[in-house]
Length: 489
Image (tube, rainbow, N blue to C red; front, top):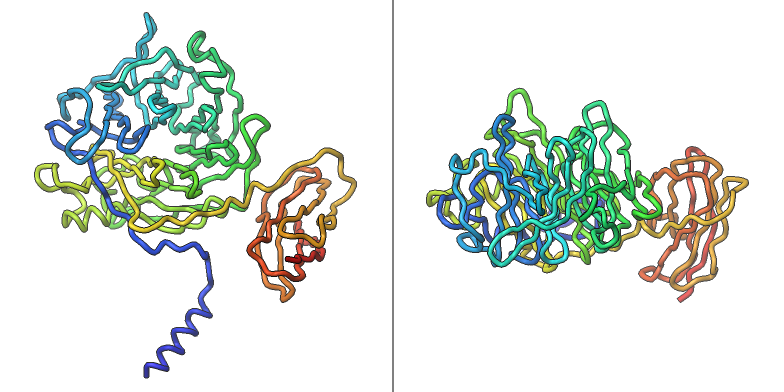
């Protein structure tokens, strides 16, 4: 009987498709969730985002978007735990209703109004995506030792479209989303850093370095960028997907169609069915993992049984792991809508409403609970895998191509890297795949991605492959071109 079970097990393994060799073999745990109680450590009201500066040092964004009397302010934390870390004194709930924290520089005053996201930079600066109705400013604060203070920096994004998500690359450039509508595509605006652009402290307006229109209509929410600015991810809450752009903020970006992340999750026990969508995003450097917060925005109590963060392959969009915050709440409290000890139960927010994520340099994850009024820290009990970035090895060269062509790789034979060059005479969706001598797919260098006419070079690194003959194939529509190459080690 045991031998029969073993054979059946092996058959199942062979028959099952292998989606990824990336293994998450441990679990995520909540290290702490700031108190939801009038005592010392609460944010005090609805909390849709945080801006992380260093491990356990962050600024929480409070935004209660009641149109008639909105509430918006920032709360600083240092060395945060469940019960400690908050800087300053704040009221709780109704005691804070209608308070809107001002950004002040001399006689220049802008109130916080419906801020949905913030990003930390330079160890102390916090950039807030604000929706003051006349200018839609990016407001800059700094976290002092005892509170959150205004700086002299702000940047007006103008027009009537609200701003929502925000992120900053290693060069200080600021990326912010313009939301769009159900019928109008949203955008991503990219601004130069405060060191590069004096407009942040003088006129408070400069044209964006880049203005990127999304490929389809919908409410654009989150944005995140790799430190070098070469990978840009944007969430479309309406279309239930995340876009990937490759390039850089100086020369521009190209939509990478080989990345495919969609969410078709239904909120449990809702009638009519209510659906979740992707909201906040964060790219984790070094590990090269993309985190996507998914929930029902302002879904209320009906959305408490759902709320999760997907861990995503940044090259393909494949879901690699899930942090099921709602299930964690249920496991810790026995319900989806409670937190024990009068809001002081440790390590659980209680009311799942995950709109945003952030990461620290120790590979911990931070989220928040909009309706739980908390900031939460998560850690992985094992060692997070590292994913090589494989979608940035494409370089466009000078010259006007005369035909659709796949050239011989060079050098050839090679060890361990070689260059593959191809030419396109019209805008095309292409794939570039490498096979071994048995016809088995080794890797997909380009996956069904749209390219403009031109000549391109792709670097192929075969350091993890054995010596032998390989074939590479370029496909555009029904046309395929292939060549042979030899790896000698």
